[in-house]
Length: 334
Ligand code: NAX
Image 1 (tube, rainbow, N blue to C red):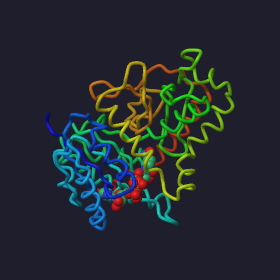
Image 2: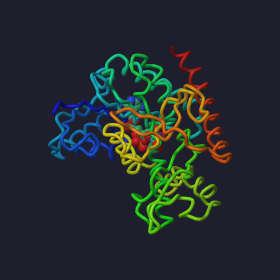
Image 3: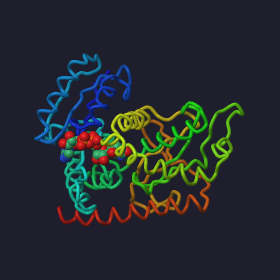
């Protein structure tokens, strides 16, 4: 089988530490798919990255054809088939949202340009580094020769969190819960929507609303819990989500690569063409999608009630503001 080249940025960071083994072990691209794994981080992290490199070697994984640790963008993006852009500028104490956005625009503009210049035109790009939706938009805009449909950002962690909370509430396995949707931004305005979700329980296949029998919770406590889950993990662990983020990245990329199963959809931040659910054109917005032949399609025709509409619009509004601010920085640095 032909070796595929997979880039992970932020490779010396904590998410990457949980992620790299799964990729190299075949959990994402397939158990018979040899991989050339490229690890990009910034210069001051090179000695840490060397340790990660040594550990990957020591895992002695048959699918791992080659490991390339680097701080050189050209080396990192050369001929890649998949780019998992995990690294980003973190928010420091006292840092304004604007300054954080500015620093990230610079990073994702550079990486978008590198994708444009060095990557395969078929490359699939997943942006994880926050603010993920807007960083993804900047990378996409900076890579005009790569189809916009090849860019996505991670909201699968939010989907997994939401699915798991429903399962816990009902005392079921999370595999019994399907088609929970995350709409919008990967931020506290995201809207975890269970209106069209189902569970498989003793009564057969029923809606989540029917199974849970607590509309107030599904529209209140549940939504807030999912929106605030990242902050709750930081408060408890003193570090942000890493193991669960890595698992979600694997789920996202595996489904993109191999497709979704019949009757199931997943949530991904993807480009809005303005024709779906009243979301403005040109935003990277989390939608329910199905995937076939490595192409995603937004699930059409879901009914949207007033409650959902308000939340979906609020998240779109936040994304418009973020985009406008980011584009201001983009034109300045161009
Ligand atoms: P860490 O701070 O542990 O690691 C980030 C790594 O990225 C560091 O090693 C850093 O040196 C590197 N880096 C910074 N700039 C870089 C650049 N220009 N090129 C290459 N590498 C660069 O953070 P970690 O916990 O791993 O989180 C990574 C990112 O994921 C953060 O932005 C975080 O906010 C974001 N997250 C996004 C999630 C999502 O669902 N979209 C969930 C998890 C996570 O919070």
